[in-house]
Length: 110
Image 1 (tube, rainbow, N blue to C red):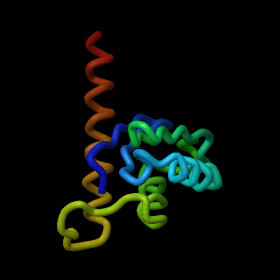
Image 2 (tube, helix red, strand yellow):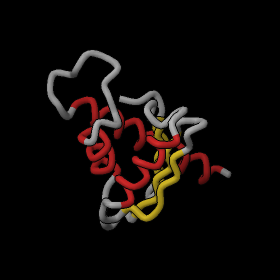
Image 3 (cartoon, rainbow, N blue to C red):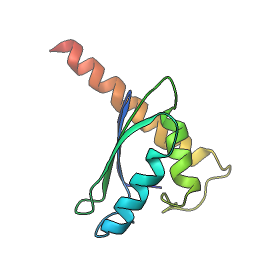
């Protein structure tokens, strides 16, 4: 789907290939995401291809945002399709949850 996803509660940064090098695509994805209930702010950077999404966790989940991006055609599979439709999404979300847990553990140690 994507090579990079970093997520914390209420904040997600994801690399989207279509945004890199295209200010039109950056503006388009910004408009699209801002039209979704619960998404408060979007910063799509056409230089890096990164899209920063700030959202209200009580109104929308990380999983829902990823699903919206996939359904709109912004996220594409780069490897063979998993056996079931949701398995690829589950892997991306699981990675994001693990990153969040590791960050919390590091902050607790500091």
